[in-house]
Length: 377
Image (cartoon, rainbow, N blue to C red):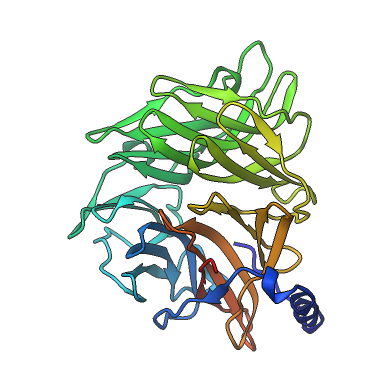
């Protein structure tokens, strides 16, 4: 994780920018009240299934100078009225939680990894509403080049996506076992040309309607790309962008008929991309103007909320008048706030974003877990 330090000048600029935005245009973002966490702490992902059930996961009590080898897992739960600590899975060794996904309060999944030097091992647990049970993941049981980037759950099916070296991976839990599906043809090296595909994000609407995204590079193509699973095979989806050094970082939607995907240069430049589609046709939505877009969530009203991290932490929403910006809430006594994940509460326009904020006066900089909540006016 890269920690950004903002100067007093930058913080002053944030205040000026915030004051320049009409109050009536700002979404109602506010800090969530969470239990005290052990510094240093960070929340990396969040999932919600309804107005009374959400989970946020991450790590706490780690040494910022040894982030990959210290700390303990952190999990918070929303019960409809507030955030509290909740039961943790029994782990065979010290682990860090990285991803959480759920289809109901009785079907919640958490992905984690042992601390260094076995960080590439993938560990998974499922919550059935009462207890956590480890679900062995054979492809990730030993250290390897396998990197799982995202997870999505629907109707008892779990999708894990990522890459192994230069090749994308698509793993499905069908309710009884894991199945690895063949990547799209374009992602398979052939004819002596080195093909590359990386998958960063996945969203499952049904067992036979799953979308993933990232970027690809093969003969005649380079740029952001979508992938779709129809229950039989994965295929690449042409979104009309080529020869662009951009990658899609996140996608979401209320259904496959209205999908939003956001991306950036992956730290290699200042470009970004926003694409909206109905599953068949796609259009680029311009005007976002931020070089870092790690996450997007779409409310029941179809309005997307995009996490933007540079030059200052903000949330951007899109409507008839274009993009609207809201400054991200910052806890008192902190700086360099960074939100990295966001989810929509199904059936509502409420949003939950998670991340961390730097504690002022600490060196090396120590982080404190933070949650931001959005309620539509």
